[in-house]
Image 1: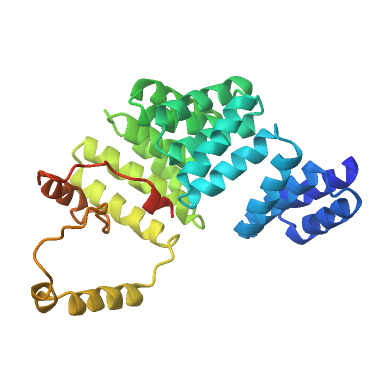
Image 2: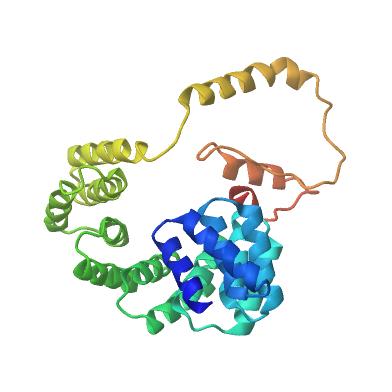
Length: 312
């Protein structure tokens, strides 16, 4: 059975979801109570974007083995990404109870904590990951980003530099370093421009590099170079984003036509309902400004910025 499951996990790692799924079926037909088989089902479902199946599979794992930290961490991630904050926190509580040492589980836990805005706790988990598995650039990047979130800029910069030393082609680490410290000369810009030429078919990497170049050009007050770099970065990033411009234009046109001055005039003055007030909007449209306007009323107080809508 162990050999069969190894074949399944290997198939999953190679992206052969159908093969991995067949292994799951075979294993569970022989041992319906086999926790690793249910865990593999969950991982295959996550990769196949079958979230309901993934939920049920990971729940089956922890029902069989209450101390399966990886399954609890996966449940935390699923629930957090769906805005089920209470369930995510409950799953994270189980992970903490178990106190796992597996770097992958610790890293996933830190990632979920970041999603929930618990940056200080996330940093502690990422630090433990790097103690358990030193020199792994992916884990190092997560810790470096957590350090930035927590204001530990010098430590973060040192870590970004170490990642670049280990993997000079890591576009995201160059971007992280550029944003962590102010450029004093153009040496890093020259390095990043040369690296960007090595990624003709990787718009994600080019996006990171051009945005980083733009930021350092700004540091050096090279406004023309900054504009060119940001423009190139935006063009590269645009290739990685699915966006239906026509549908977006139509939606906002409908909003303007429906919620016009006549509609507003028909609404009653004030609202005695004591239900919560949610301020929603597109990025940079003034939602943060609207909140203090509303909370200046004596009968309204702020509950802060919530993560749930963004995660839903």
